[in-house]
Image 1 (tube, rainbow, N blue to C red):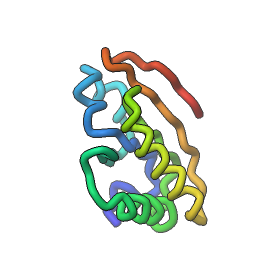
Image 2 (cartoon, rainbow, N blue to C red):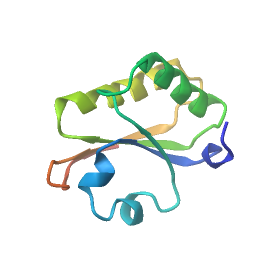
Image 3 (cartoon, rainbow, N blue to C red):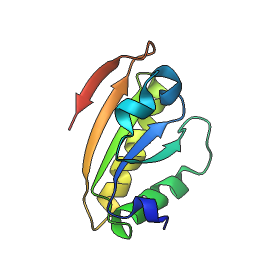
Length: 110
């Protein structure tokens, strides 16, 4: 319900993404709102799906850029975003950025 999510372009980043990319804030957050999560270390992933669904439906976010690392555990964050979108009435554009362990962008999908 935070006002900075209303009609926003949102970056949903895995916790470790910002540590891997030196210019993360300047390059990826300009004009966007940030949400962070860790699908490996955080518990109760159902809560994340529900929060994302609420952001999609009630805050009516415009887009969701999911930034994950190339490691297998990060795929859970993308899965949660897709699950929330499937449950949502509002279907924001979902973009995916996969970050390599050296901070390079490995893959981009719109």
